[in-house]
Length: 459
Image (cartoon, rainbow, N blue to C red):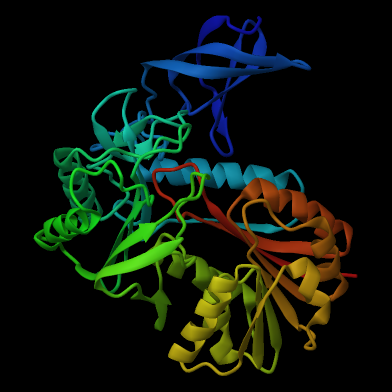
């Protein structure tokens, strides 16, 4: 077996997050984006130190577990979802098994409480960043998601299953309008072009929508004045029949060389540059770039689990580290003495302060800064700590300082179980014991899953 060889085989299992495992020529091979039970063809893309990796070429025979009645038509082409052909029950089963296997690999005695599913498995996402491009070099204008494995090619995902239909209507109308107008997209290598992204956010509870067109400032090649072009786009969007309603329609200018959605300047074409969402009885003001869980209904399940694991907070000081826009902090605050949130993104901290005031909470303090750098400067001492770090987990030095507080209870919320497992090894080595854990599926149709862990200090 060597690089470039082509093989066929049946996928035996999936390891988190999307590693299909099979055997070929007596050797174990990892092929991403495959499903247990599929017969696939693949090419060996890497082999070193006895480990083989393959790249999926074709699904020759579907798996017996691929029984979804109405899978997304973009499945397998778009790089966004990997489990669209599976029933939701099967998706939950796979994720539950994967999470348990990961935690079992580092914990001997604890209670695994299974997995909580998302209240809805279709149309659950409240935010999408669609890219402008072409499906193939020189092809017509496309607007949607990148093709699987491609940095350049874009698939027009106007029938996406994980968003509300309003997203698809706005996307389709935008793509058609700019195609007819003959407007080109931003080319990443040459750094020329106008259209970059379409950002859409929609609150599940209130139905309020923010739609933002993200462009460069390069207007020289436009066939009409930019003001006329934007006015035409606005008129197209306003004529759409939507289930929700617009809170705002925006034009964002972004001249960054990086392929990220950010703002050098934001102009409001209609309405305002924010909307409101509701979560567990609280109200949150959300701007175009505010961090907020992408599955609002799933977030309620996640935070209910976290609140259950936190337990009694009466007369206690709670640290919410990596607090984002302070959602967890505000859910805990009504039954705590004080909650201190720490978050490195200043805009998120400002949003947390605004939302706390909006919800009438005066016992929340939000600090802008890196947990590693500011944790020792906080005057309050925690009685318990909630951790909700980014995907890469907690910096080792920051984790050391967190452990040094010696609180009786830690609740760790993880959006990447492999990072969680790495941190659990350190925590257990320093006197903490995992009491229980539960997976929460926030991302139906995809490989991702959240995990909540409750730990106690044993000394």
